[in-house]
Amino acid sequence: MRLVCLKNKTFMNFTKIKISTEKWFFQDMPEMASVEEWNNWATKAQNNKIRWFLTETLPDYLSFRFLWPYERIGRKLKNKYVRKYNLIHIHSLKATEYYGVGDRLLHGMFQLLVDLVELEKAQRQIVWGDENVTGHITRGKDRNPEMGLKYLDWEIALGKKGGVNQSENAKQIKELYIWWTVTRINRIELIDIKGTMGISTNEYYRNMRLENKKNIATIFNEMVRDKDEELYKSVNKAYDDVEEKYEKEDERMLLQLVKLRKNLLV
Image 1 (cartoon, rainbow, N blue to C red):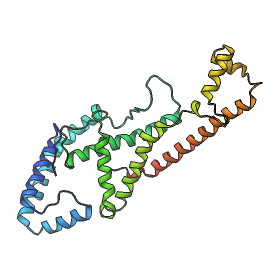
Image 2 (cartoon, rainbow, N blue to C red; image 1 turned 90 degrees about the vertical axis):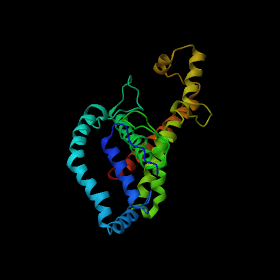
Image 3 (cartoon, rainbow, N blue to C red; image 1 turned 135 degrees about the vertical axis):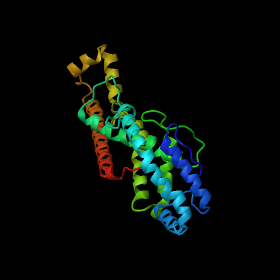
Image 4 (cartoon, helix red, strand yellow; image 1 turned 45 degrees about the vertical axis):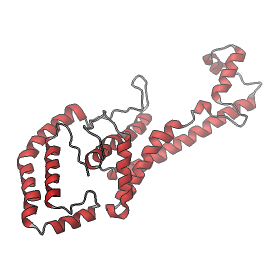
């Protein structure tokens, strides 16, 4: 395992030294393992009391006594002025537009999921994985979807060895992330959905505007449809049906995300 320390992170530098020392004292220390495997290794390693004291007990005391108080103050300041975990910056909504509460709720919840994968999961992969990546990830910057997905794949591959539900939770997180970032954004726009007569809402009103030489506002006001009632119904039914389908899919996926709430762990 190649451990890449985070810039300006005293605690991560300390952890890097601690892990390197452990690997030097304990040659059988695994590079990656499930929770159960780590516990088994730790139980075995504690039999060598002197080495365990030098690599675990003493470093833990020093970190709790001296490093953590310093890190705690720095972390609080960084959370308040840099990371701002109390805010949700929704990248999928335009800052210049108005959105109702329903849209903000949907996009806000999935923005948190995206942040989990592209920032927090990705950082875990960069720090703990065998990756040739340097630097650190800050909230809202340096996103790395590839590393986030790679970490999720590692969790999924753990299977039953990863502890209760870790693999299954990672699988659901990945499915929701792919749906939001790939599947949903590639939906066909409602105005481009074609009805049974092969014409979409966009084409219908565009053709009407060209034929009548009127702007779209005038067309909607007059609702001229005496000669093409069947076409009008076909266009609007296709629009309404797909709109309802999209709404139901959004609701189903949002509920799935809510049910997964307590398992959105790093």
